Amino acid sequence: MGRRIHFVVDPQGWCCMGLIILVWLYNTIFIPKVILFPHYEEGHISVVAILCYYFCSLFCIASLLRASVADPGKLPENPKIPITEREYWELCNKCNMMRPKRSHHCSRCGHCVRRMDHHCPWINNCVGEDNHWLFLQLCFYTQILSSYTLILDFCHYYYFLPLKKENWDVFVFRHELALLRISAFMGLIILGGISGLFYTQLMGIFTDTTSIEKMSNCCEDISRPRKPWQQTFSEVFGTHWKILWFIPFRQRQPLRVSYHFANHV
Image (cartoon, rainbow, N blue to C red; front, side):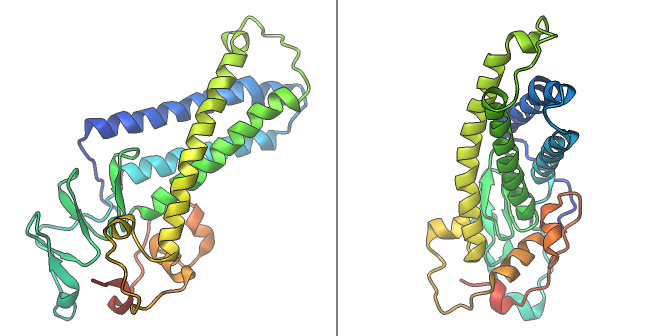
C-alpha cells in the first residue's frame, strides 16, 4: 500500500509542477553561486550554512517528487470487503464502486481515493491516505527553504561584509541585484501561500477532518470519538516515531485503526 507509482495525465498539472521545479532549480543554482560560495571563500560564513541549504533543498525536491508519483490511495476495481467491515463501506454514485467511508471520487483523476483531502495541481496528484504525509513534508520543507532563501537575500545586502567582486565579469555577478530580487519575490510569494496551506493542513489533522469534509460540512457529528493529536499524526505518517515524520526517504506503513474511530458518515 502506498508503494505503487501513480502518474496523472493532466497538462495543467504538468505546467504547475514544472513551474515549482523551475523555482526550485533557480534558487538551488543561483543562491549558492551568488551568496553562499562567495561568502564562504572569503570566510564570512561556515560550510555548515552551505550544507544546511542543500539539505533543505534535497528534502524539498524529494518530498515533491515522491508526493507527485505516490499512489494517494486509489481503490482497486474489485475490492475485497471483509464481512465485519461492510457497514463501513458505501457505493460511489459516480463510478458505481464500493469504497470505504471518507473516500472521495476525484473527477480529475477519474477514480475514488481513500480519505482524500483534495486534488493538488502543484503536485499533479490527489492528496489522500497514502501520500498525505509526503504532502505535509513538502509544505514544511518548502517553508524552511523559502525562509532560508529570504534570510540569505537579506543578509547578503545588510549583514555580510561586501564581496571583493573578483569575478565581476561573470554573468551572475553582473546581474546580481536582479537575480536576488527575483529570488526574494518568489520566496515571499511561495512562503505566504504555503504557510496558509500548511496551517489548514495541520488544523485538519488536529481535528481529524479532511479539506473535502470541511467544505461539505459532513463532520458535524459531535458524538463521534475524538482522537489525541499524537494518534492522528501517527496515522497520517504511518509511524509513532516522531523523528521519522520528517524523513521522506522511507516507506509508509499504515497503522491499524479501529473503524470505531476511523469512519463516520
